[in-house]
Amino acid sequence: MAIPTDNEGYMRHNLISQNRNLKFIHRLSETMLWINQPLNQFFLFCSLIPPLLILIYVVTNARSVPIYDDWDTNVILAQKTIEGALTLNDLVAQHLEHRYLFDSITTVIAVKFTGWNLKLGSFLGVGLVGCNFVILINWCKRDLPSIVSAMLVPVSALLFSFRQGISWLWPLIANTYLCVFWFLVAVSVLRTGRRGWPAIVAAAFLSVCASFSMAAGLLVWPILLGALWVIGYHQWRHYVFWIFAMAATYGLYFNNFHFLPEGLNTNLAQVSYYAIGFLGGPFVWSNMQLARNVGLTGLIMLLVSVVYLLWNGRSLADIVVWLALAAFSIGSAIVVGMGRAHLPEQGPFRFLSSRYVPLSTPFWIAVIVLSLSTVAIMYEKRITQPWSMPIRFFVMSTFSTLIGLFIVASIQGSQVSPPVNVNRELCVLNYPTTRDTSCLAGLYPVPEALGDRIDMLARYHLAVFAHPSPP
Image (cartoon, rainbow, N blue to C red):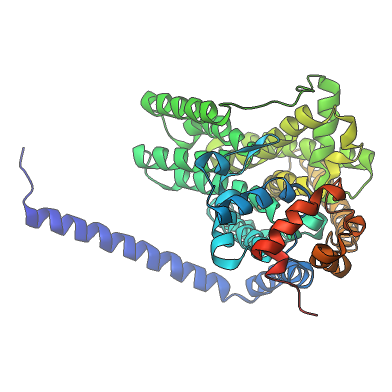
C-alpha cells in the first residue's frame, strides 16, 4: 500500500477546501437567485414584520427589574458574584425541576460587565428565536423547497407571537429559546454532517447543553436516539456511546436532585387533558376546552399528514426531523403535565400560561410543514385518490380557523400589561427610603420578603439601580 507523501497530503487537503468553497458559493448563488424573485421578496418582507413588532414591544416595555423566579435565583446569584462567593454548584443549582446553567453564566457575565442589565436578557431571547427561525427555514429549504416561501410567514408569526406575552420581557424564558436552539442545532449536525463520530459527539455535546438549559432539554436524548437510525447512523458503537452519554448526563442532572413533595402525576386522564390543552396554547388565550380541541386537532392533522406522505412515496427519512420537532413539544407537554396537572395552586389555566407557548410552538411548525407538504403533493402529482379531497378540505379549513384563533390570541396577548410598569420600577428604586413593598404586588408572591434583596441591589448598584428607565 502506497503511503502518501507530504505533497500529496497537502494537495488532497487543498482539493477538499476548494470543494467546500465551491459548495458554499453554489449555495450562496442559489440563495441570491431565490431572493431575487419578487414573490419570495414579498414573503420575506412579510416574515420580518413579526420580529420587528416584538423588538418594538421589548424596547418599549423591558425594564431592568427582576420578576417572579428571578428573585429566588438570579438575584442570589448576582449577590454571590459581587461578593466573590460564587461556586460551580451555584451555576448548576436546582430551581424547581430545572438546572439553568447557561442562564447562570449569562447572569454572572451581565453582573460583572453591565451591572446586571436585565434588558439584555430580553434581547438575547429575541436573538435566539431569530436563530431558530433561520434553522427551521433552512430545514424547509432542504426538505420541502416547493413550499419554503409559503412557510416564511407562518413560522415567523408563530415564533415571534404576542401570544407569548411576558415571555419576551422575562429573561429567564430565554432558557426555553436556548433549549430549542441547542435541539435544532443537534438535529442539523446529525443530518448534514458525515455519518460518523464527529457528528455523534457534537450532537451529544449539544444535547448536554440542552439538558442544562432547562428540564425539557432532557427529552432531546431519547428523541434523537429514536431518530439516529432513520437519519443514517447504523453502527452499534454509536448507540452504545449515545446511551452511555445519556445515562451520564441524567446521572449528573439528578445528582442531589430534590423532587417536589407532591410527586409526579400518574393519572393518565389528567395528564392527557393537560398535555393536549398545553399543545393548543399558541392559538388560545384562556378557554381551556377550546385549547384542548385545538391541541387534539393538531394531533389528528399530524397523524393524517404522516400517514398520507408515507403512503404516497415519502420515506421516513424525509420527515424524521419534523417528527422529532413535534415529539419535543409533545414530550414537553406530557412532562409538564406529570409535574403540574395535580398541583391545585397552579390554577386551571396553568397549561395556557404564556411561558409554555415557546415549548408548544415547535409542534405546530411541524404540523404546518407536514400538512402543507401533503397538500403540495396532491397538486404536484395530481393525486385523485378518494380520500385526497376530504384531507385537503380538512387541512385548509383547519388552517383558516387557526389563523383566526391566532390573530385573536395575539391581540389579547398584546393588550396584557407588562409585569413591570413605571410605577413598579419607581417603587423598587424608592424602596431604600420608603420601605414600602405594597406597590410590588405582582413581582413576587410575597412582596414583603423582597426588602433585603432590593437593599442588596441598591447597595451594589445592580439591575434597575444601575439601569433605570429614562424618564
